[in-house]
Every structure is written in structure tokens, then in C-alpha cells.
Image (cartoon, rainbow, N blue to C red; front, top):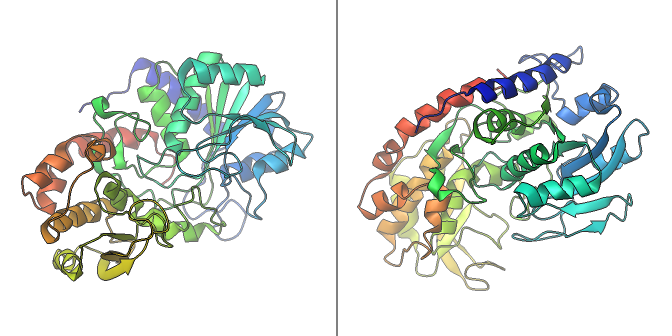
Length: 418
């Protein structure tokens, strides 16, 4: 895979750079508050500047329950009550603006009971139909503020992508308010999507664990992937370092989806979500989704095989559980629980591959989903075909390193933080 910065990409990157002139990123160690380092989100910085970036604009906000302030108020409620902002519409993604819908659902078109604002549904909408929604809503500036979890197949970053493209088609300006990548932004890991496997769990060729914030992704999307750049402004955080896990932010954690209850879930998700592509439970319907994995007929041998790999930063415990929903609902299954003891050393994607390799070895009933969903999650047939051929963990991980190195080089052009 080769990725280059095109002329339009340079123009788009320049647009984003102009926003940084108005709201410069603060270097690591400087909290921007005159004292010790304290993270301030993009919204906090926007509000502290009197919403100057939105002056004179008719604003629509793409958000969900994670779009909150440090004191746990929703930014829509805050902006709606402030005369300095002409907020005229809200756009909800999967699970909805207020988060009432489960996986694969949304709230539909309605008026928000708290504010009276019209709420429009963006889920599974893209291109001209989504552009028409922005036009009908009467906005001229679309603001995005949603907490991501750092994995290519988590759909909110593709909501970002689709909304940017739709805003371009509708002639709207786009503003991204940044939030932390909860599992750090140290580096990208994992296979890179091949475009022929593009779906809503991966539109464009980025790594499985991208190691970027949403503002950084917006810059990358605008320069590399959109058919033409959208007028883009980004409001970076201050006081965030790429090595920070979510608990360093001091922000409350709001589950961005029903099966992402804690930052611990996000830590493992970019690896263990691969089990959605198998006949094993990925822990949905338990109190530890993506940390518990299993199926009927699995016993202690899987944990034993997984521990023999000596994967960095993690140990595996024989576990038994009965999911209340999804695969094996109401039935007791055996499997493993991940226990991450060293977050800095832990590699979720390598761990996910190691667990697939050992599950296939330890349980004769192992099978891929018949629709080859694993190829959509990993971005190509490479993982599935190598594991089926008997490849070990290191061999599978080695299979994507060339493409990953190419993505890392491109990724570096759009990073905002040290």
C-alpha cells in the first residue's frame, strides 16, 4: 500500500493548520492553566474562547452521550443555554444522541425533550442523502464531538468521515472538537485495511489500532481520503501527551456504546473485537465485554495455551460465564478472561491474534463466521488464511508490517501532539 499527500491534501492540511493558529496545541507538560498539566478538551477550549470560532454561524452538532464537560453536563445543553451560540440542530450516530439505542440501532428523527432542538439521525447515512439532511437542518457549520476508543472498526470515526464528506457536498464548514484517545496515541498497530474490504467498520486504509485522536483523523481524512477537502477547523486539546491513558485526563468516562462500559474495555477492544468474526462469544452480555471470551466446550486448555505465548503485559485466567444477550445467551460457556497487568507493555492487536491462534489449537469446535466477517474486521483475508494455514502469532503479525510502516509514515504528517 502506498499513500501520498496530494495537492488537495496539502490545501486541506493548510486549512487545519489555520485553525491551530487560532487555537494552538499545548506542548506536553504545559496544561495551559498556569499550574500543573491539566487536560482541556477541544470543547473546553472553544468555550473558554467565548465560542469565537462559531461566531455568526448556524451550528449543528454531531454528538452522543460522550460529548460532556468535565462536570458531566452535555455540551448540547451547555451551548443551547448560551446566547453566544446559535445552535439549531443535533445529529445523532449509532446508539443515538442521548444513547437510548442498542448496537445496530439509532433514535430516528425527533425533537430533543430537554432542549426542543431537532435531532436528525445520521446512522448508516452518507453521501448526498446525509448532505441533504445537513441542508434541510439549516446549518452552515457542523461541529463533531464524540469520544472514540482508538480502533478502526469502532464506527464513530466513520461517522466523522461520512459527515465530513456530506458537509463538503452540502457546502458546509466542519469543526472537530478533540478528545483523548483513551488507549494512548503512542503508535499505530495492526493490519491496514484493503479498500476492497471497506464497510462501515472501516471505510479507508488505516491501521486496526490507529493511535490517533479524532482531530488528527479528521486532518488525515481531509488530506488523504475525501474526494475533495471540506473547509475544516480543529480545536485541539491542551495538556494531553501521546503516552496518556484515559485516567490521566481527569475526565469522567461515559460509555460511548453499551458494550464499552470502562476504559479497560477500550484497552483490549482493538484486539479482542476480532472474536466477533468467530463462533466464540466476545463477552457481549456480560459485565466484562471483550475481556471475557468463550464458547461451549472450551475448557482450561485455552488459558494454558495462551499463557505459554508469554504475551507482554497480560495474563489469562480460565473463566466461565453465561451471557445475558448475544452469542450463547443464557448458557454457561468456558473460556478466558484477560488480565492486563502492564498497560504500557500490552499490545492488544498481537494479543488478539495470539488468542485466535490458541483458540483454534485448544478447541476443536473453533470456526470463523461463515460470512468471513473477520476479513472486514482485519481489513483483508491475511489473518484468516494465515491462521488456517497453521501460522503462529509472530508470523501472522509479521505479515502486515510493511503496510503498517507505510501507514505510520503518512499518519505522522497529521499528528497534533508530542
